[in-house]
Amino acid sequence: MTAWELWRGRLLQGTASVVCVRTAGPGSANRVAAVVVSDTPTVVAAASGTRLCSRYTRDVVVGWWTRDARGQWYHVAAGSQAVRRISVETSAGTRQGTSPLVSGPYDRRPAGKVTVTATDDKGEPVPVLA
Image (cartoon, rainbow, N blue to C red):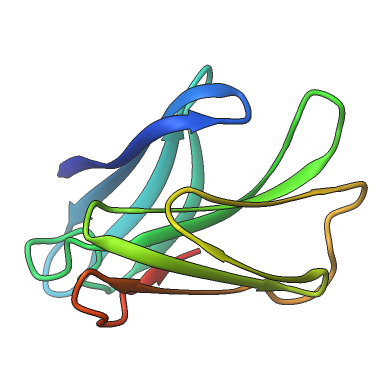
């Protein structure tokens, strides 16, 4: 198992880290999880059979929904150090910026698909774990 912090900073709940945890099984049976560590660690995204969070694909963006203490919804996208630009498209609109990119607040979680895209410091696409 490997774990590395891909982002640390301030979020709605205060200071937090996004940690990428990778477990390897036989063959291609690996599992990757993104964990937001603040008051209570929470798995916010996961995938299997991928090179994300490995020595082959270290740069990644993680996207997830969260709520504040008042019940307002936010979409957060945070990326590793080489991520320079993030774009998040929801049914409520598109937002672009740097990491972490926070969209909201919304009274209700917007319905439909969320599309997160990102580029690194060379302008190349960065994979997204959401």
